[in-house]
Image 1 (cartoon, one colour):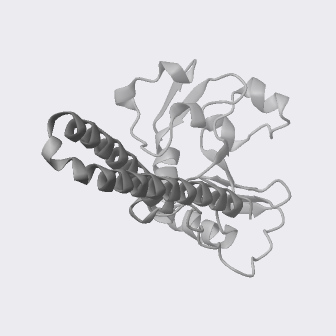
Image 2 (image 1 turned 180 degrees about the horizontal axis):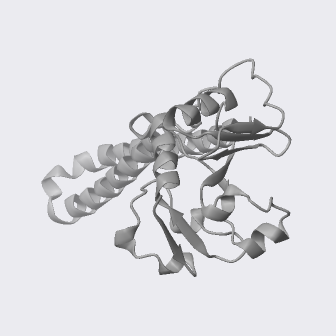
Length: 224
């Protein structure tokens, strides 16, 4: 079993850390920052993470002797050798987690349903504590966000309409001025252009109203 000790997790060379789903800070002692890298244990932890396909929230990994004493840990705790991990069950089904942990080679199991975590270590094979109650249903799928897909957004459509109409109204006004000053032959068209300008203004106001309505509706959905 290969182990390497560091006086602080910041001292770990980047090239020496090969467990992609975890950082030295996550595995280091919570009380002192010291770190004992137990490669066999971390290999199993990474394998467990890969098999489950979702993050593992590490409550506790390596503990320095002084921190282990301060938190009331066992004198021969596997945490002292970096061979144990306390993993939160908030995002895992405990039954599936235990099954996967045994499959990758963890042998020691401690169940802490009231505190919401499970202890796993390299062994010897043993277990303690009361198992987590079986959940009636699996985790529900995460709901889609309340906001619309960008391409279908009423906010984008309303804002786009308002913007185009505003530019159109401005363009018509410029055209009116140019025609009035330089093209006396087409002066009869100026009143029609004035009507067109007001049409664009009306479209712009409708677009603004749609945008405001969409924003308010999105906010109400987020409150549900």
